[in-house]
Image (cartoon, rainbow, N blue to C red):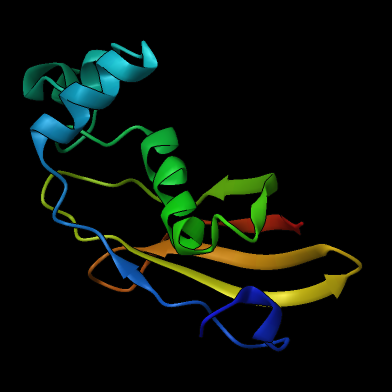
Length: 133
């Protein structure tokens, strides 16, 4: 697919599989976002909170969704996000990002988006509105 304009309703952009989640990814994201909650970086603190281990920031996962549209940056921009977090992302999880065209309305393309872990479980679902120039 060379442009989003060529995409038909029900078709998807190319899926992106992220590298396994690393502690360094989450440490870097903590610094970039200012979210220093230790459940994202310190094993003992995550366990004290009742978690089986550290978890990725939900916004880290959501932010990575933009990668689905990076190749189309010359065509437009992400105008709106509507996301629901469905599950936790743990260290070493392999997250796959997906987007399927749901609707075309004037210059706006509405996509259903999701992030799934290596077991195929949704960790995030929602919609992205992409505005074409």
